[in-house]
Length: 129
Image 1 (cartoon, rainbow, N blue to C red):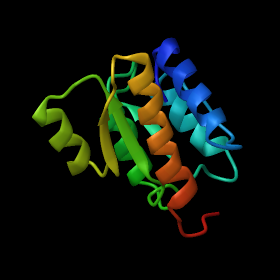
Image 2 (cartoon, one colour):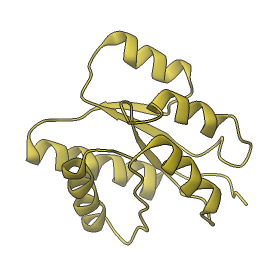
Image 3 (cartoon, one colour):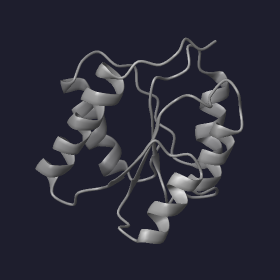
């Protein structure tokens, strides 16, 4: 869930390289929450931008963690911010990981590959409804 079309395009490309994953893209916090309510099965991983329009990533994270059905889904926060306060806030709100978006294309792609390889391919979640 990211409002930057370039970052979304890079992430989608990396996901395609890492296997057959169904990806849903949301450009705002409310759109992300609506997509989660409609999607079944629920996703195995949520990539969430910290700075999004209409509703920031922390508010979306709170909503995700506040629902029993989505509470166990790993949420990886993505941000250009390396501010310690942002990192602490994300973990305090229940983030599974915090990744600073690399500005370099190859590094960004590599980060998406690493995230996908672990969270979507190696990590195992309990069954959800």
